[in-house]
Image (tube, rainbow, N blue to C red):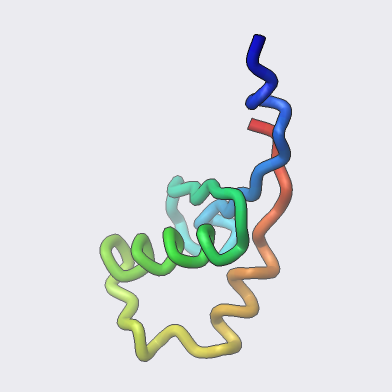
Amino acid sequence: MSYAHNIPMLKLKCKDAGFDCKFVAKGKTEDEIMQKAGEHAMKDHGIKPEDMTPEMKAKIKSHIHKSLF
C-alpha cells in the first residue's frame, strides 16, 4: 500500500500572490515552486524576468504553504 498521499508537499496558489488566477504550483521544495511560478508568471501574466525583483520573489515565497496531497 502506498502512503505517498500523506507526504507533506508545498503549494502556491497564484491568487494568493495577488492575481485573479486559478493556477496552483505544487512541489517538494521552495525552489521547485518558484521555478514553476516564474514560468507561469511569464507565460500567463506577461511578467518579464527583469520584473521579478527580490521584493516580488519574497512576496511570492511568503505565500508558499505546506499541504497534504
